[in-house]
Image (cartoon, rainbow, N blue to C red; front, side, top):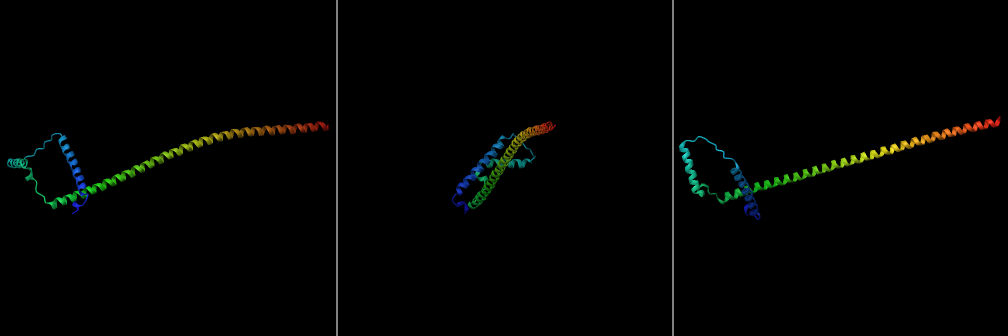
Length: 170
């Protein structure tokens, strides 16, 4: 029998604890509800029979519960144990999925943050490149001006040299 294997007592204690907590929550929920009374019509003889049964159950609660054999109890215990194992498996899967989803979200957030970082670095690089292009354009204008001045000076010198040569020939 599986209920006699080692460690089953711990599992059974766990099942009992879970059931006790569940029952206490159900009882607390019943007590916390406002008093709702549901009425239905019952013939008087049936009502008297119900009252007499309730009185007997209050007097002797042991007789109101049917006796169950050890085999029935073992079958019930095995069924409860399998249900608890299934619940444990499902909760483990849900926890694993939750952790995986959290990891994926964290990776996505890091990726988004990294993308934003790359974009900000690109924007800074573009800004630096624009400043450098402006410096190069300013330098180009200065060089073109110097070149134009040098060409003008050379043309002036060539004209002066021609004039000087023409005066000496006359």
